[in-house]
Each structure stands twice: as structure tokens, then as C-alpha cells.
Amino acid sequence: MLGTAAGGGLPQWNCGCPGCATARATGAARTQDCLAISADGAAWYLVNASPDLRGQLLAASELAPAPGTRDTPLRGVLLTSGELDHTLGLVTLREAAALTVHAALPVRRALHEAFPVGPLLAPYTKARWHTAVPGTVLELDGGLRAEPLALGGKRPRYAADQAGEEGAERTDWVTGYRFTDAAGRAAAVYAPGLAAWTPAFDRAVAGADLVLLDGTFATDGELAGHTGGSRTSRGMGHLAVEDSLPELARRPGPRYLYTHLNNTNPLAHPGSPGSAALAGALAAAGAAVADDGMFIEL
Image (cartoon, rainbow, N blue to C red; front, side):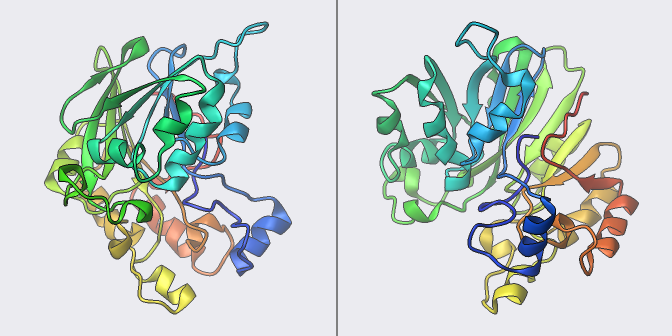
């Protein structure tokens, strides 16, 4: 787990709320959502490329180049969305000799037109772009297999007016992934942008050893309660923790961890009002909160 916070991280640079103030004072920081995954411990893939990527890579010894070389274990990037907090780090990877990026079709188009990361990278590195198609398994290096899961149609703000077939209403603007090794011995599901617990997602979770779930907001009205606005968790494309917890009871077995925590979420602030009750509810459901730097071996 390279990063476990929602966009802006914790603390957010422009936020003086009690949670961010406490995070500044105690150093209890979280960097923005990013995962590194490998089936053999030698070939690694990033899932998302956060604005904090340089620091995240330096903090992970498994991803360091071999002494005296510029060759790293990173083989590519898989994107779960086109959001800025999931894609800005691609520019950080411009020094790579080559870069492979997997993304859903509308996200690929957005990153070449509305937010032209693709053309921006072209003068620096040999970037190879591949379309991640829901239901079609990607065969990756080191025996890693990744099946994209269509999670929702929330597009990034910069692509709000994207036209054409790829910009029409689609359910793969946000994707998750079900990862397995070549032998099928272990399975992990990564869904930091889960809009709803659908039958398709339920099937993806079945038999998984690990499920990393959307923990952006604890409750549907959390953000409105902090800002006085009207934006809800569901309206922003995120299933609140309180709404996904009952689903966990129906699917016991996997290890459940919540990631992509917003700075308003009490789960990001142990000791804050309401955090103890929430943590208790998670524990009762066999779930917990993921932390930056957490290493999980299946």
C-alpha cells in the first residue's frame, strides 16, 4: 500500500479542519491512493500513479533499482480512473526507458485529449498504452493476471464535456481489478472507487483472499456535514463505509481493508469523535483500515 488517502492526501495543504490540524501536529499523514502489486516479488505493477509517487517509490525498498543500474522492478501502471490524484504521477515516471499503461477506453482518450498526459510523455519515454476491457484478463509479467471490473461512470471534471462514443455514458470510467497469480493460488480485489455493490462486484469478491475497498467517506452525508453543501458520497461515485459494511457480512472470508480515505473520514483520525465506534463496526465485520506502507503477502 503506497498511499491510502483520497485526493489531496492527509493533511490537505489548504485545510485547517481539526483532523488535518491534528495530522500536522502528530505527523499522522497519508499520501494519495496508490498500490504496488507483484505475483513473483520481482516484476511489480503500480495501480494508479498519485501526485505523491516519487516519495512513495523512495519509501518502498522493493521498488528500488538494482545497485549501479537504472533498471527498476516496475513493469507498468494500471489505472482505476482518470482522476488527477490517480494520474498526475505518470509525469513522475517520465525518466523510465519505457512505460506501459493500462486504462479503460474513455480514460485513455481523456489522457490524450482533455488532459494530454500521453502526448506530454511522448518526448521523454517510450509509452505504450493498452485498453483495459472489463471481463478481459490482462496477462502481466511475473505471472500476474488482472481482470478489470467496471465500477462506475463518474468521469473526471476535466473530461466533463468529452464528446464521442468514448465520452458517452459508460460504466468503465472507473474500474477496479481482480488480481490472481498464474496458478490461481491467491486473489486480491482492488476497488478504491466503488460506486455500488453490484452483482458483478459480488462475483469478483467471491473466493478472494483480500479485498481493498472504497473508504473515501464513512457516511453518505459526511462531506455535506463538513462543508454545508449538498454533495453526497454516492453522488461523488463512492459507496460509503456504512453502506458497504452490511455487504461484508454476506461475503465472509476475505480480509477486508478500507483505503482511499478522505480527510473528513473519522477512520483517518484515530481518537477523533466517532472513530472508536466506526472502528468497532469494522472489527465486528472482520474489516480494518489500510495504512501507508502496509505490506500484504497472500
